[in-house]
Length: 456
Image (cartoon, rainbow, N blue to C red; front, side, top):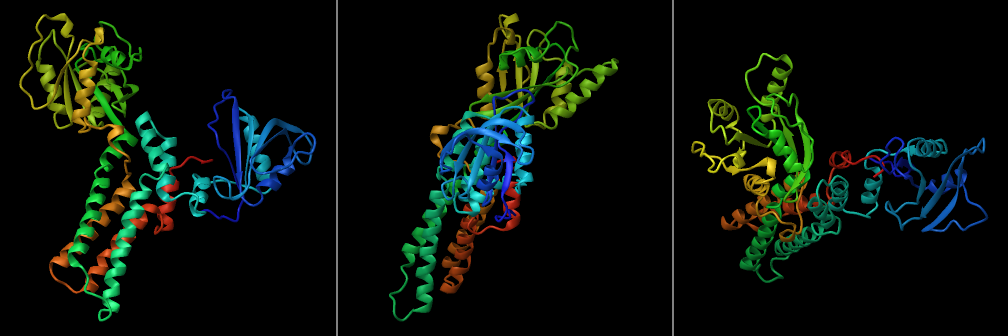
């Protein structure tokens, strides 16, 4: 857990050796400005006011040696990301400049920030709720435009707002029920039908939000897909046509691919990691044998297997043998090289989707992507049709909410006293609070923010 009395510092930009024009060192805490004044020297006597950018040099406070020529951005509390005093040194990019500036900040009393500690402080100081904090991590790690849009929706409160409304409704219901328990003789009887109606409305909305969990997880983690098949059926050509690149070597020689070749794509807004594997066959070549074994292992670890078949050769015993090895996995059969035949042969009737392609001419790629989306049960996934997509932690808390609300309904149906109604209603309120971070343990916060990068 963050010690908010400390002043923290970290490099806030991705640093690549000898690349990048700008590198940012971020400092947050009560001593941020004092540290900056020790090492940053602007010409003249400019005002150190909030939301001003100063130009100057960064110097070692003892030796006076210039470390970098930089800009300093001042954001004083509470008008900052963390609601603390924040300064940012905008240095030249690369490794050495930003690392030297960071070390100077630490030498002047700051400590190196932990993963996600800036955002954790923003949460603890009321700048963000937990759903917005998680959306920041999702936005930083987004692997597709659609994933980024969902993250922005969460950051703008499109999840927090309905959750707060649902929690408020449950709190109002609890207050009405407890009032009847405490002041039964002074108040009219509880409107049971209205209570059941409002409970059902909350439950319906919770279920609608829960329905986005699978789609949200798919957008965040993506699909891992492996192309498998006999040698020379066009697996590498298919990968190249699909990725519009020459990632894989293509020749007429069987066994060209000896290892797994990877490509990152986006299909229907979903990140897809495509793995082109070595052709599966019996071989005495020791290197190829290793590649074949890796192909078999890869097929068992991915989310979806694409079994490529050479249309000109038809369905062979070797194809059947490979199918037997992967048929327990989510599977699509690709009948490739249909350009070599006037009429594509029909493989045996199998309980899996079949797509016809001519990788050499970029034909059938759209049909393949449609089949992948359908197999992943996200064929109707569309950012325009969804306002949000929850993560696993939020789904777990909302599942507890759903169960608690259903238990309240059972309690009402069994005609139990009002005291029993309040037990599970309080549990539902607690679970909704967990989604927002209003009722959350330190261990949960550690788990959430540990997946952030340092500097964010």
